[in-house]
Amino acid sequence: MGRDAHFRVWRGDAAGGDLQDYTVEVNEGEVVLDIIHRLQATQAGDLAVRWNCKAGKCGSCSAEINGRPRLLCMTRMSIFDPDETITVTPMRAFPVIRDLVTDVSFNYRKARQIPAFAPPPDLAPGEYRMQQVDVERSQEFRKCIECFLCQNVCHVVRDHEENKPAFAGPRFLIRAAELDMHPLDARTDRREFAREHQGIGLCNITKCCTEVCPEHIKITDNAIIPMKERVVDRSYDPLVWLGNKLFRRRRD
Image 1 (tube, rainbow, N blue to C red):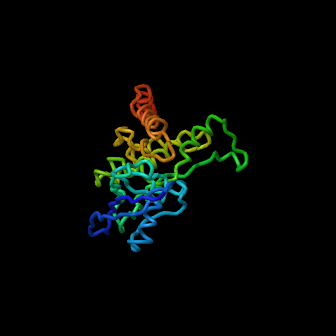
Image 2 (image 1 turned 90 degrees about the vertical axis):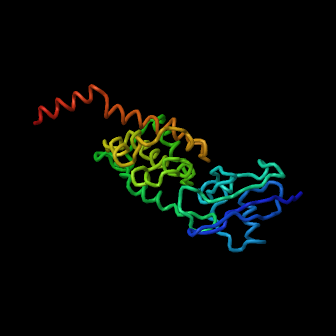
Image 3 (image 1 turned 120 degrees about the vertical axis):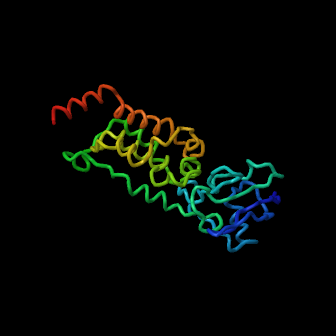
């Protein structure tokens, strides 16, 4: 049986905007994206929202619901109190285009900077062999749907615009970690790249990215912390440091 729900939806564009109030019908089993679509159909035909699959697999409908980054299509209306006002706003870390749609091109620029997978030169496609444990370890990170909720909630990106040139964000740190863990990736500079070009040192592992991941990827524990440890081992291990000094002296 249907009921009415009170929504506050951010309306505006890059020049500014504000929250507008709506009362919208809600039916059993619906998600927030259903209500946004009903709002478009009945009261706000020009409301801009990005979506595609409505199945939690495309990552398109990212927004903030009552201040928490979520997928609109995976947030059930049943989790809210019937008398609760539900506030829907665009992701705060990225520039607003219009209404709930943000410009996430920052993320695609960061993706293009990552060196691609480099298979061993002596193996042809079809000859790759991996242990199952290595498959499972990297497979977790491949579940990422690039909703960019982790990027949005990361305070290094969200609260400090000046960090964006130097910091890739959690989504791309797990990509670097995945490739560094991959037994068939022939590159040896992933750790240096994470330190010098992705700004892994700026991450202070608050785990907020893990908390909002709709695919339940353990971004911090399984990717960023191990990558940080490998970067530190490479850079600050006294034996490595001594070996580098001796090697340079011998070479000189």
